[in-house]
Image (cartoon, rainbow over all chains, first blue to last red):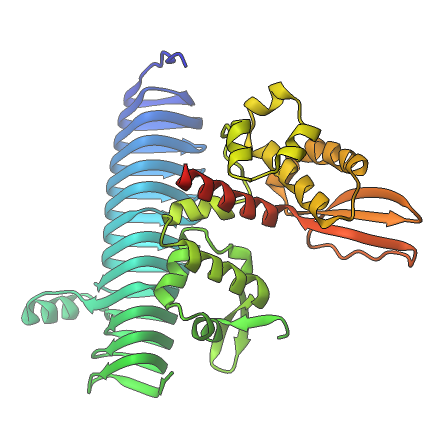
Length: 244
Length: 211
């Protein structure tokens, strides 16, 4: 196969461009790109809007990027915010420090979010680590799920091998100060949580099912089904527990 | 629900864990379409088509020790990878018998064989083995499979071989349709293309492991 000669696209200041195939796409400032983009590297420092699908080996956003179509990438890193009307599929890393919002499915291998992750559909990953808040309309399915709650979180279903939901770690008085300043409560609301090893706290769920289940403080659970082991904290509220 | 099994019962029956089920779903080993949600008194419960899911899980359990999950996903996916197989390879490992190959393929075509053509050969082999179809009749449906092979990618097809008053014919139909025949019509054989593909992929894999 002959290697195509591809051009770079660079927008500095304010500008617009059409989509297409590029080697690298770099935005410093503000840009609007209409059409699908296929490139090796996409970098945005500032604000960008892509009106189409995006396919890139590597995507780096520092600032704010909006995508109207689907995103396909091996390596996505966002410092700031990313908003997408489509879905995300990444074969490897997704790192977001800030805010991410997707209308479609979010698929990745390692997903690491500090801030907020919002998705209207499902999230799939081998490893999902969230420090912050999460709002997922569908199923969160990952081998290893770790959520540190910094506010109110929602997910319809959570499933995987290891599921760990804990409150954020912060010195007690700092936490108290925080809470008095901002009116919020750290909790996670879900319909169903299923996994092999489940350790949860501050979680409200209708049904929790697993092999080894540990229900921590602040949980309100309608029904727990477990196979091997169960531990329930004194500060948790469990209406029904059943060994299967 | 008849013919359906709840997730809880399924895990108990097959002895797999929640984690495994979710992992397999993530790897696309279990099609999304099989997850059917139903409201029950405890909230929502997921149901699966019993026969299909149990067969699939048993298959995964049997193969997962020698194969990576990604390889398995390739087995179950309806798409075909474009690979080349030599005639010698096909015959040596008894994927398709020599007689069938000699009968239905001429030389140049076989040396550059893709799995797509292998599937048609494999299906013809199955039909001939059933003893319901003569060699001449097999040519007819062989041509038909070849002509429509690309459609196997998109949908789950079933190949029907029928005979009415001594006249043989065959057709392809998407597998979720129900068919009714008049009383003179005899269904000789019904082959599911996806299932044949899975069997074929397993056979090829076993052959490759040996070689």
